[in-house]
Length: 188
Image 1 (cartoon, rainbow, N blue to C red):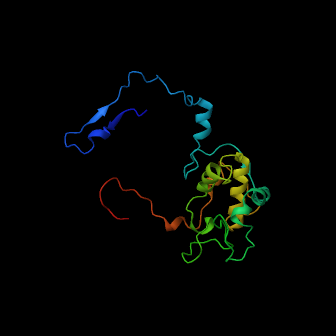
Image 2 (cartoon, helix red, strand yellow):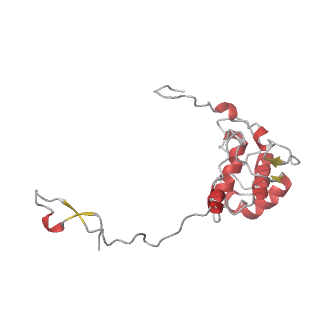
Image 3 (cartoon, rainbow, N blue to C red):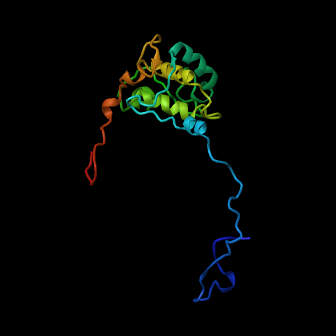
């Protein structure tokens, strides 16, 4: 049975045809699907992180721990870094051996992303591909540290946390122009 507005098929080609509102008086109050989200469920999904670090959770990680996690949970899609450039991987390359703002290089986190906090935010929300959101905050800090270290941005001993991560200056930050337009067709 169809509900709501529907076109009467018998008068489809009649120029006097109209939309007919079906009887909704007998509809149930709810369709019995789902339930209201709890505050804990909402809080778990409210995980945005800004470039200035606002929204970063407690926790910490380093590149040494991050490499172990990366090899176990990321390398199958993103590679170990030892693959020849012509090897096709399911995911994009994340690191290059020389960070910088060279526009001719393959765009990776180390030479294209403007903020280190974005690495944490993206990995936390979307990775691993087959189980997004399953990494702990410490694992995400460690993976972020490993990616930054493998891109020659931080040392292996640098600990990433809510205080240190926003202070990392990404090599490509200068390639991006803040969009401070309020209205109008200005071109930046």
